[in-house]
Image (cartoon, rainbow, N blue to C red; front, side, top):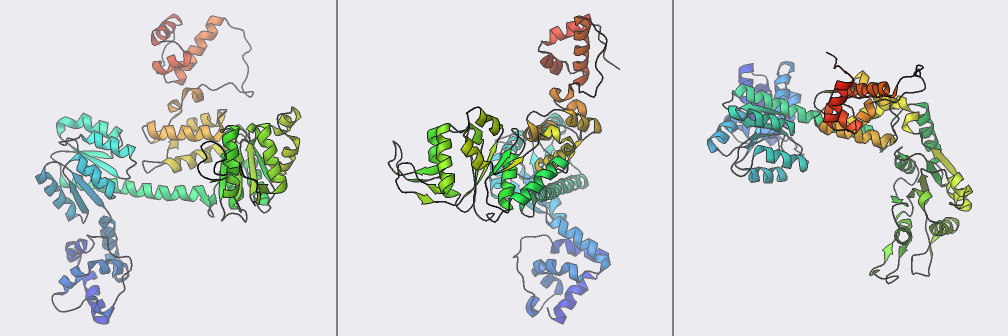
Length: 533
């Protein structure tokens, strides 16, 4: 940029606040300019009013703005660039309302697009991304609730602000239950409308940041993140680091849901094979005939229906890693074929005589004790020795309870849809840590996902947890009941405990007790159970 042109821009950015407020928002109204802009002496070509030239080249100026603003003007520039990012879709069947809303939003330097019907809105959302959708509840071809349901099912990443008449407040509240950010009643106040839309856009920005946090938490140095700092999981991570350097077969042993595949992927990504494929198959999910063709492939015409030749997973994983999940479920016949491949390093497709070499590292996983399975004749000893060169035991979640808060934070950040991860009260977290978790990490992750969808409020309390978590089993650390009581008294105590655990939600308590509500009410009367004030 030559001295004259730079002087023009500096003159503009150093003007009084009034001038700044009048002109600057217009400079940043549009955001979609070419990514690469080279500053040249001809930035302001020709003659004429300098403001007109500024307006013509506002996109270039927007890029140069932070360098040209003085300390007093920088905040104004920052505010303008924040506002310029907000893209609003206005959905209303009344053209006058759309026009009025467009003028109001344009004054805030926001980009607006209009839609006159539900179908038009859905088509526009399918083509283009918006920060906020300003949605009228009543449209000629659909209700705003229908569009909200469609957006949720289609995973549309935007915030909805509902426009409603005073008589439609109940509908607006229902819309918020479906995921709308807020509602504004007609007739609206412009200041209130702008404030709500701005906050909705901020919420979407938080969700973007949260998505970035998810990427950081699930990846560390480009690798899956094994979450936890308990001694048990630290041992696993340490062993993975040592094992990854070799090409020896690895057996990962642990209960269902403990994260064995995550460990296998980490072994692969830390190895020299990281740039090659990681191929997985569940040996217990397929019958022998299908598993055979999956692993080894088949030749065209090898059997009825084999109209084309097919590459097997061993070939697909050549140079990389083949993960055999639930290898303990493999039949004796398939164990023999697998052993032959591991011994020879050669694979023969089904129906083909020629064998060829493959270089795939074997990482297997099982939730069984393969040593016991081999002793009892259900697993071959020779195959056991081949796949269990190195064994990585993955602990059950109940053996690493100190990691539960970290896992909860991790899964909450991964699946947060409202911009903020779920927070748990101290009592709720204690319940989570005391629960046995028979489904291990998979069960915990599913619980967090369910709460993110169904829970209302900023913080999860203990009484919001499922009943199986709130009715805590007595542990060895708790004192045992020493006095004998009658069967009727035991029943009374149990009914009272279930009612307390469900916060006196009789429908939920009746399901736990496996009785109908009428029977539950009778027991409450018979046992003289009084709800605490």
